[in-house]
Length: 406
Image (cartoon, rainbow, N blue to C red; front, side):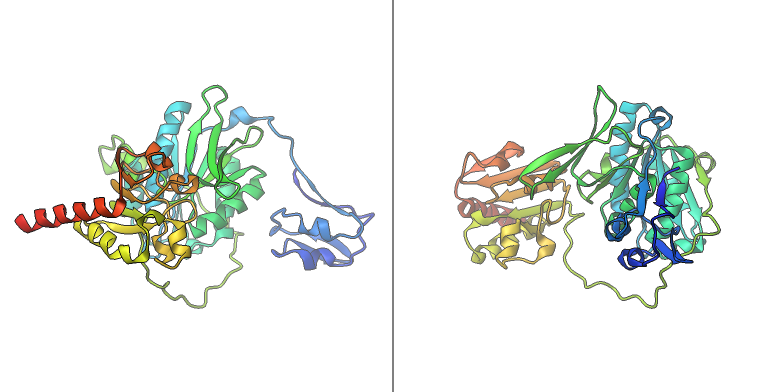
C-alpha cells in the first residue's frame, strides 16, 4: 500500500521532519517519527531528515486503468448557496468529452444539511447524468481538507476516469489535495480539453513558459486524470439539456454519499468579511477589450462610450493594467480573467498567446487593428484594418445616432 514510510532502524527522533512539515503530517512519539492522517506527501520531511529515514512508497502505475470510467465535475456553490457558473461551463465540456468516451457525466455536489434539492435538478437538466451529493454541517463553510476526504473516498470507491474542477480560489486549493492523496496528476488553468482519438487520454492544454507557448499535457499512467479550468474558458450555455421529465426522474439520478464520521475540520472560522467589491467582467455578455494600439490613456473615455452604446463591459490587456490605465479586474487573458461573451470587440490588441487563451470561448470576435498581420486576426470573425481611434469614433457616432433616432 502506498504511503509515507519511516525506517525505524535509521530514525533518531530529531524532530526536524516535524518542524519542516506545514500540515501536521508527521509526529515524533517515543523518539520515532510516525506519519499522521494529515500527511499530503509533499516530501518536505524527506528533505529535512538528516539520516534518510523517511521515504514515500508509491503504488505501481497502470495496473487497473480499464476499471476507471466516467467524467466527474466538482460543483461549488458560493456563500449565498448559488452554484458558480463555472460548474455549468464544465458540465457542457464534460458532455462533449463523455460523448467521445461513451461514458456518463457525474456532478459532485457537497452541501450543508439545509439544502432544498434544487441544485440537483438543475445540474441534471444542465447535463449531468448523475449527482453525487452529501448533506453535512461540516461542508458549511466549505473546507478544502474535509472536502478532499469526501472526494477521495468517492474516487477510490467508484473510480472516475476524469475529474474537472473550476479554477476558483477553493478549486485551486482542493484539486492538489485530491491529486496528492490519489497519487495522480493535475494540470492547472487549462484553456482546452480534448480526448485523443487514438489513446482515449484527456489532452489538457495550458499556457507554459510565461504564456509564450501552449503545452498539451497527458496523464497516461495514473487515474483519475484531473484538471482545473478557469471560469469563462468554456461557454456556459453549451451545456445540452437532458430529458428530465419529472422531479421523480431527477430524484432517481441523485445519490447521497455521507462523509466519514471521523473527518473533522482543523480550521475554525471566527468571522467573515465581504471582499472588496470591484468590477467583474467574467460573465459579461458583451465586451470591449482595448490594448496598447489605442495610443494613450486619454482614449479610454471614447472606448467607454463604445461600451456604453453596446451595453458592454470594458476590458483591457495586461500592459494597460501595468501602465495604470485600468485596474486589474478589467484585465482579460490567461493572466487576468478568461471570458466567453456573446460579442467581443478587440481594439488595438495585437493578440499575444496568453491573451488569446483567455478569449477562446467568445462566440463572435470583431478585431480592429492597424496591423494587418496581428495575431488577433487569426481568431477574429470580423476584421477591420485601419486606425483604431478613427474607426471607433465613427462607430460610436453611428451607434449614438441610431439610439437618438429610435
